[in-house]
Image (cartoon, one colour):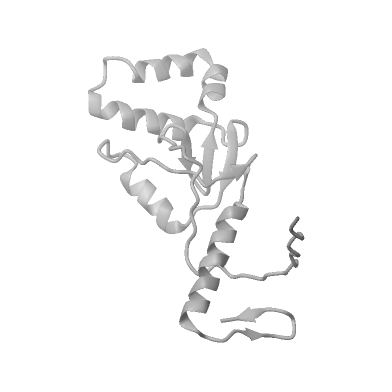
Length: 162
């Protein structure tokens, strides 16, 4: 019988040097979110079921045959963005950069731009970095360290500098 391997617990303090995105495998279409001051993942079904009859009639008209095919998508986008209550009918909210806001606003009324978004993996409403991703990043950094032959420097607080 083999003896169990002893594993030490090590505290690691890390700084993310490059953008990180770990998607949850889904894609949000432009009617499922709104960007105003922040990114709002909206609950479209709940909002539509609570719309007053005159607003619901207006929404249904937008999906009817009265409008040219290309303008339907942008008309629906505009209707949702202008009318949804982002306090009451939102599943989660995220900060968004000025650059992303600018791209969204510039391409919003163009039917050629589908504006899909792939959300970050979350637990409930909070994004998180899975342990497997952190483990993979640390393993890659450690293997690169071994390959390069660069000695590590361990500071007094236990931080390892490469």
